[in-house]
Image 1 (cartoon, protein in one colour):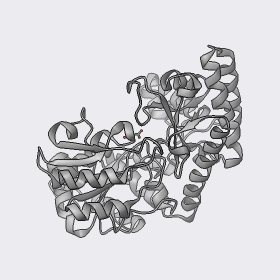
Image 2: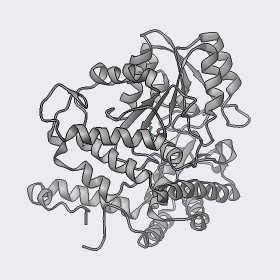
Image 3: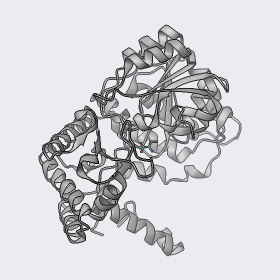
Length: 423
Ligand code: DSN
């Protein structure tokens, strides 16, 4: 049963309601290892599904282009104040629709088309919007990309410094989508200062770890902090930009009216709730457990001969190169899905294969930690992953089906926020 229940939707559109219920059930029964996903609380679900979706609010609190903001203003201000308090920043903008528009707003605020910008290449662990060639950011700016060292799989800071000195970028992005190691914000800040670039820390993946004290904070080092709200932070799908007072005006102007129209007020409410939840002591325990689980899973995979990029993890994310297992990332991820284990196929640094058929899979522990799984269960998970991948190479569907049943049996013991098998 969907929680909160959806009787009106069921009556009005049973076809759609049935699909939602089935998706909820799927999320309940699958071991969800996609590192950018999570389960929001029922409180966040409720806030995201309110009548706030009915209201237009272009502008910012106290300066709107529509009347009737008596309650939207305090809701947005609450979200902003909670973001400022949680991360210890001067200024927060909670209006970006998601991570990519948030990053585009940063370009709009601080660069002109054709300007040099520096970011981590997508196949090295960066994000599309950090200047990758197929993204508008790679097409409209003179993008220069850094990567990791081939021998260690770890960030090559010498390369970052050399490129920054040579290209004098307007923006330097740090952070990304497939970085299993701690980001050295002070080192990036030193480079950015030297070349007078704006340092942007994209903490989308690790925002919850930072809020919970399980990863160092970029505050005091980065000029701008960009984050989504729905990954380790465990809020609704949305984003925030945070900065010092000096950059507040430029960023606000870039988000609205530069790039977006009215904010999604129902999402703002969900963000406010998740920031409140992230400020509780239990969230620090959650963040620490996410890392403990990822490290235990990495150790168990290494014990089973998996080749992990950088040799392990410091955070919530594991990137495994499956070349030595004799299978590509895509068929492996598809087989794992049939075995009840959900992950995504991913390029690995210096991948000889194509992005749509790469060598790796990306795994993470934010969602399973929300379900309440601990490090004691990670060897079992690693065993299932290993067995499923071996089964995939032999087209052994019976083994995949058997594992899916075992996964379902385990997860039945761990309630899922937002859905219950009991009416
Ligand atoms: N798509 C997100 C991820 O999975 O990491 C990044 O935008």
